Length: 425
Image 1 (cartoon, rainbow, N blue to C red):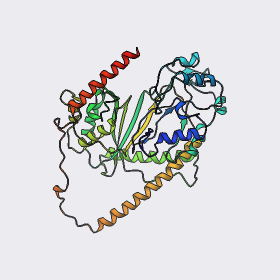
Image 2: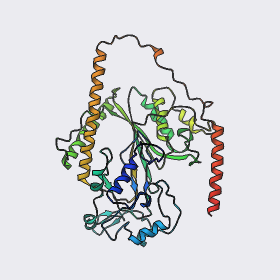
Image 3: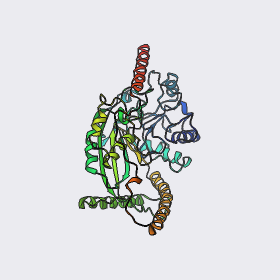
Image 4: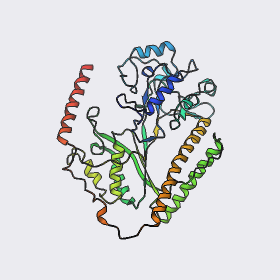
């Protein structure tokens, strides 16, 4: 049911499971007083490979980066210094408690005296051996499709949401003879800072301006889907098994590269779209993919991107359906100077868990292939009927999502927020 906890919606979310695991293992006192913050808010059906959360956890250390004494931790929350993650939590200001050397985020890495470049927040090997192994504690009580693969110490002023400088999404779709050249032209037009109100679902309650920057967007042909990902018979694979799996993936990439060089693209091959930016609007990636798919199918020209970015001509989003949620993945969340600590053991276990999950889906694929093969044997081949497929309706500026009403709501909401800011001053 998505990532974020929703009190009025039945069904568990990723956040529900994570917070329940934290309470069950006594790593937090309670979910409302742990300074919780999330980086990505993925909707139901969307996957996340690199999402990040930040919070205050029980520690075996008494000093070091991000370590707060018990009295300081209690006073921190008495002053209302909490983050944005949990329902009912609201940042009210107050004085943060952390050491002088942690107060300023240092730019760049420094030399540790041995010629090695390290992060200003690195943890020593001695402290790492003393510290709790958070992934090993949490993963056994989490569902098999949710796994913690890394953690990092950080000063209290660092939050998962506001300290992230870039988010990376990937979207996968079948080639199906898409016009890659036209899609790449459309991608080029999307780069940069624009008003993306016509590429999102408007949340006029919380958002009043829609300027965002897309730092990079690319589309590549990746070839046929990998048929196998062998990790052996060991239920807990070793580091060597992980390397073997990586080699299998790399060989698939080489096949795709050779196909690309020869110019031959398989209709059953898949495309990978990568979108990178600092922040995104609600459903912005899926709306963007809907436009790119229409361009790839030759239903719209690449210049449709320029038209939609022209908010004077189209002040509100025209009526069009967004792309499916299933192929979308929050691929990575990037931070400066945060030295994530990966556990080989937990990575191997996670690989094993997702291998078994992949096998379940692969069996369903085999069954579908059987149906497809059997039904295709006796199919009478005839001329395709052009009337069987509904004609594409071009995007029309006159058919939009209530531009005058939306703009009025944005104006009112903006005025309300401005009055609240003035009162707080």
